[in-house]
Amino acid sequence: MKTLIDGAYDLHIHSAPDVLPRKMDDLVMAERAIAAGMKGFAIKSHYFVTSERAELVKKLYPLCDVVGTITLNNSVGGINPFAIEMAGRSGARLVWFPTCDGKYEQKQLFDNSKPGKKLPYWAQIVIEMREAGINPKPITILDEEDKLTENTIQVLDIIKKYNMILATAHLSHKETFALVREANRRGLEKIIITHADFPTTFYTIEEQKELVALGAYIEHCYTTWATGKVDFQVTLEQIKTVGADHVVLATDLGQPTALYPDEGLLAFANKLVEAGMSEEDVVKMTVRNNNILLG
Image 1 (tube, rainbow, N blue to C red):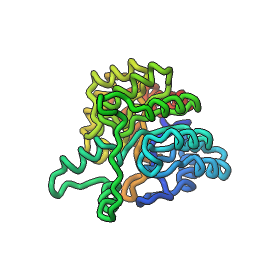
Image 2: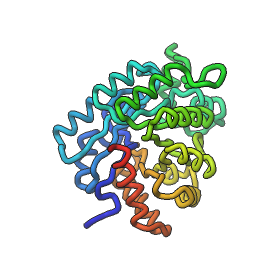
Image 3: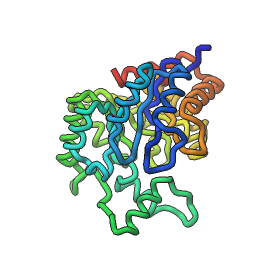
Image 4: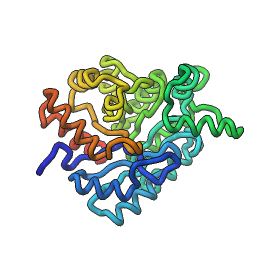
């Protein structure tokens, strides 16, 4: 039976092997994606380049287009043009800017956290590293004058050279707008604003429209509303107002106690239809737009 995720990609999946506990590994995810009628998925790691894994999985499961990625945290040298160049040469197709090692993200979670507040899995690794005396400087893409660093400019040029997708990850709004404006000026056409309704990266509808005007797609993830980080009605309003032509749906799944990503993506798609969105618009966000970005 045809579903709303036939031919879909989920470009935000956390699978094993990883240093964090995961519900499934790459092979199980490929099997599930094929069974669900999906076209493929992206392997996200906060710490490692996943393009080599993706190539091996595709050899075993040629019906599943597995997308390799890199995230610009300290384990790859931060905003490191050499790491991006090697990722591009090895077939990586998506670049996330800093997540857990970002200066803004760490400030939001550690400096502003309340006693007893539940922190994400990766925060424990940061704490353990600090206790062990391994405490690299949190990453920012801006210099003292709030201009993009030279390394960031080089990274943008390499992303363009290899026709990779730029994802803003957990950057501050100031960083995101500076990055996307420069990416637009340099002719980058594949940009994703990562989980736009997540608490630490929350963008207003007006901000999202401004980013769309610069050529970006807005990402909404299943886990954000499913875990109560945002009310679903807020997510729905943002998607409807910005428009399906400019939105990609993903899951951010892989947590051991959560749904499998294919289940989460289908649940997200069905919930949007139940909330009044047309099947055509939902398919744009699960299938068409992701295929455009990977084209």
